[in-house]
Image (cartoon, rainbow over all chains, first blue to last red):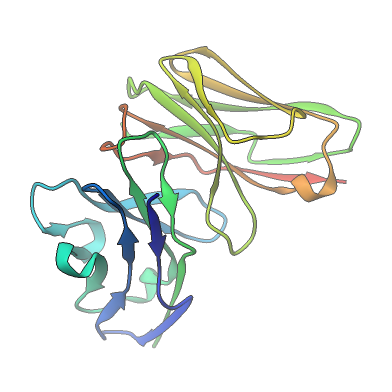
Length: 112
Length: 113
């Protein structure tokens, strides 16, 4: 069965610093991987998705993620954090079904 | 247009009330979803409709009753809820199948008193 692990429930960075949010997946077949962001009292917004076309995926708001099969990872990065990036981030996986399996989430705090 | 709309934004109901949550999308998507999200937790899947037919029910209590009147609309009928059912209820839609991303609505904040 597939699963997702997000290391670090909280990540704090200074404005302008690199953002790195970690996601590892478990799947016996090639997965489809997604990153979503959730701002307080809002729904989830898709940041980016991996569907095997390219291992480096660029998303919205300057975020990108790299699929590494050998490490079963799909970490999310952004070169320079902005105050508006403060939110909850969820990594998710789906495999040949309609179901999305979410990680437990990482809360990103950005300090001035 | 990648918008999923949900009404109402907030709902307060007693344990004996009957209410409904509504969700609408006009993207031509063939799959629609209901999720429940508690504070500081990821969304939990409740139901999936594919081509207007219920395809997944994640063992949700019968006090929650989904309905898909047509390919653009999804309802969640609520009856005899418990205080622990208080949560953010999210609707989502996708083109179809595992490789397609899901688009989420803003949610309905439900409080059961």
